[in-house]
Length: 435
Image (cartoon, rainbow, N blue to C red; front, side, top):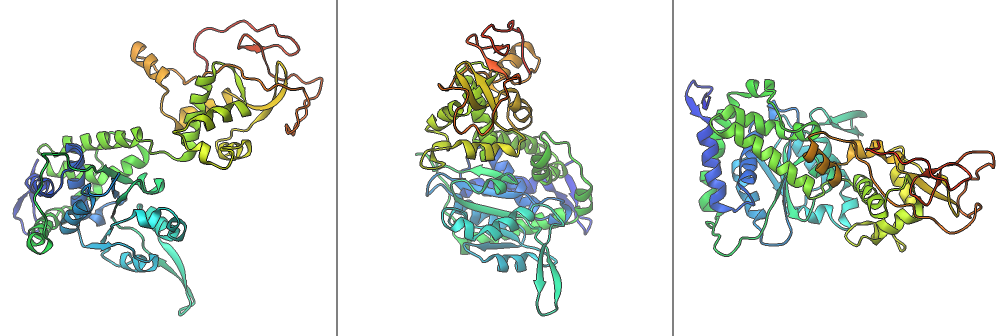
């Protein structure tokens, strides 16, 4: 149903208001896709119902270069969202105080790349923490008040939009609707925006949104829309889908299409932490190396540091080291061990040690996707590699772990299968998929 009732009993067409906001956006800004336009429309509308939400989605407007329309889009967002508070470089204390009111503003941060990028990043950790905590209701900041000698709880919950060049911190983008702007192509035109001339019309549109959504806060608070995504992505997008469902007409379908399209873009763009990126790259390294049940640490490092498009070669003067690799993997419960290779012992990792983490944190490998597409059955991800060995003896320096003579240790045979201890005779090859 696309007709809604205001607090005065007047019938309001919510879908028509969203359509008008859509027309306003596309008048002044060219966004990268129709789904991106719908996402921004729904985010702006959701800002007018902040008191109904359990989560406050962030809007990240990022561009690869200057003159891609991000600041102009933020102008339109400022003109149409709920109680905007725009800043370029505010102190965390000022933002805390502004949010910690009965009616928090919609925080708008322009030039966010200057706040969270480069040498300024560490100095603005408090602001990043505020933005992360404020994504969920009832996550206050706690401060000690010397005047009253008591703890003070400062609310952090508020919707926020950030615009800048390049990616925002991954902890922010993980809580955000991310719109990737691009420069206008030849032939693409927009109307010039003048604040004094055009902002009154935008505020009238904002007032219509407030009247419509303000009359349905209880309905929106109780809403549990079906979501095409799960976990934090569902938390972030739920307010937008709830607004789409309330509006009716084509907006419920458009809202869900925006969810799937923009979340898929984030996944394709590698919007993952460095640790998850490392898991994925190690799976690729096993594929590059062949199909052994284990690989030496130095061989994995050679592949990881040799990828010029990966971040690992920049991890230090010598690239990613064995110690740093171990530190990054330890939180996943993955540790190296001393393994016996045909020419001696070396530190390394068994492939089975990664299987659980790959299944939990990484998307399916290309081979698995092909298998699923051809058979309709999902199979466990099995990375592959050939057994690289480190020349040496059983007493390689730096292994830090001796292997008793009477203890059986996995050995790698020249036939790429686990061999029995003390012989190069391979075990029978097992056909089919391996977990």
